[in-house]
Length: 320
Image (cartoon, rainbow, N blue to C red; front, top):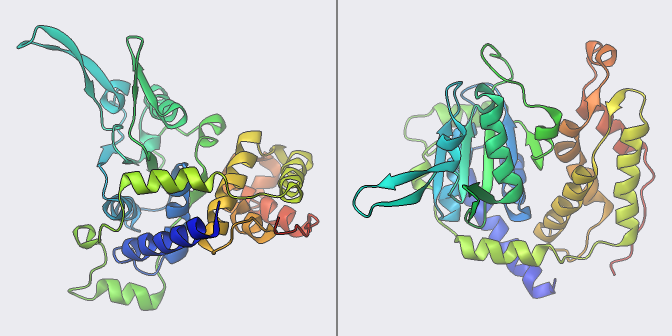
């Protein structure tokens, strides 16, 4: 990736973040994570209590992108075809044709994904992985870029279907928005504020530009020392006695991919250890499983990953 390409991406990344933050006040760090995931070609799981801006964030990203967006409210009676689409009989032409479902959008908001049955969750997660819907043996590719922002409420668990670990692994990051700081919350409460006003989000790019940058970012330099560092972090999660499952190879690949985008957003054409450290928590924490007796004591996967990042030796790579 050339210096000119990095400079162009850094400017675009800042413009997208600024546009989204116009609707989601005081949460720039979370906005940056979601925008980074979009450029990395991944997907986001937002886990938070109701009313913190999860839906607003997803819709604001779609507004800044300028592409097609859709929203699916996941419920226990939602069928896989309600998400992916189905074949229908056209009475006028007498032909069987495919009717696209809401996944055929650039940004898909999967609201309360844990309220749908496992087969419906799997239908969405398969499209997330393959970027294609196959019906009656015919593949139908979804648009590019393709970002799924799934939300779930970790408090009200009645009538929900927990996402298995293998499905959680499909999300590049899991993060939380949280309540705003007092200053920003007062600003949100003030009448006439632009907070939550998705229609006012400026369109600063287009899907073709995002897809081009995503392809360029995949070529950003990652030194072998950085790859060994990422591998060491993964090996440490697998060897940690507090975890009954460590980070997968897919998780480590996602960490490298996210670090490439983060590095370019900082104006660098190479990855440094700080990029990996900054993203290890959001990328790896939901991919590890803490032993039950450890979890009872209050230790979470994020705690363990954080300690591993602090204690693993950091390399000093060259800029290459």
